[in-house]
Length: 523
Image (cartoon, rainbow, N blue to C red; front, side, top):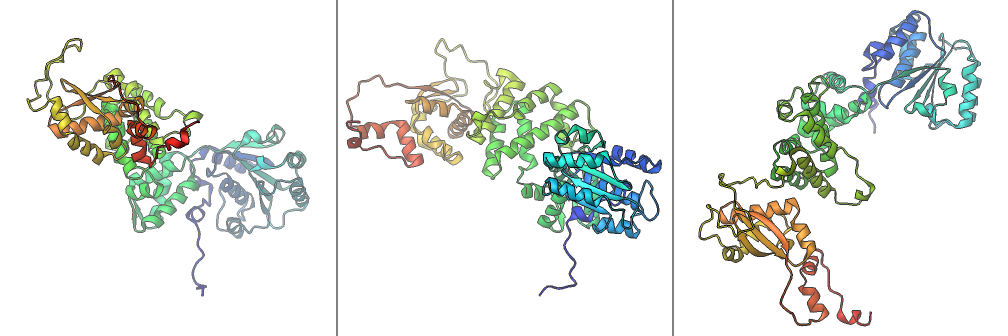
């Protein structure tokens, strides 16, 4: 049985909807025009409010309805206390008609509205019509509305709202006073969210507020809705981790590590950050979007536009901005923010992210990244001799480190590869150590597919780290195609298929089975 004393649930964005022009967030230019018109009796008979969703178009229209019907008289700021103001706020004022053109788009709907305009206001000074999403009216309905706007009845005020003003016919726009609502800035959104959270008696971390504001995309309604969700998610207090978990975002530490790797040219650190983020269940697309946001903050701070950035109060982002020049930030942003071509839509999103990181490194640091040693580097030593002549063993290599010892301990370093990546291990097992020159181990593979797979940056890094950990000295990896030179006897189709290294990988990884030889005969 429902308790009648239990108050009806009301979403936060409705509970904290502005009731006066002074409470309208981020639209001071609109407020100034409307209040001046109210103060000097220069109201237009029709207004067109355009702007993105959640920026206050319908709220401003209701405030205008209050201002012209307030019991205290037509004035720049409604009292918000008289019965007319309270009825408008509750949506029960008889002289305020709201119509959603998305669901009432026919010419008959507009004709009915035209008939209603012939009646004088019942209790207020003005009969106010708010038509939302006006661009969704049918062509004939727009023509019918035009006739009403051309010959407006006395004491009637129209407010048309749209998110797509270009779809409103010029004939209608020319008969309205057009006011454009802008996206609400992040700083303003954060201030409003902080105020709402305080009114609700809940502590919210400042960084969590910034993430909520940024995720709202300039919409105050979306920002407050996200805060409402966060309060339900975290109950007593809201932290940055709570918000990241709720929105499915990667933790800030991983995003910072990735951008830090771009700044320092550390390929291993960046790829490791991506791998860890994916292992934690994060989305590569979301991580990429977060990198774009962080790089944008760094760009703004590097350029000196500290008031425009989100990271001006974050010491870690400020430290990054001091290390990354404007040019480097732009180069990295051009890579991460570029739209994916249609041909990449069905590709591997993790690989796309890794390639974007690699391209950003090359853009910022050039070819120096390609020849950079792994992170666990040995003390600096003289450059190796040109490869045209056989190079002697590097000074740090002991007598124990030989090509034979690398082959003999293959189970050890392959085991480490398997621990790091079960997907890569079957490919690594197909390699044969062919040569040891300085700190470079050359592996041969009997398929170009295997060479291409093992030449990927992440694969090279994992192989190098496994060898380094096994033998206690820094090693690098080189791969090449190895072709058999000795003649081989003709084998049965099943035997030759199962002995092919590519087929063995397919059988082991994906459960593939060779086609029966009898089925292939005569094909």
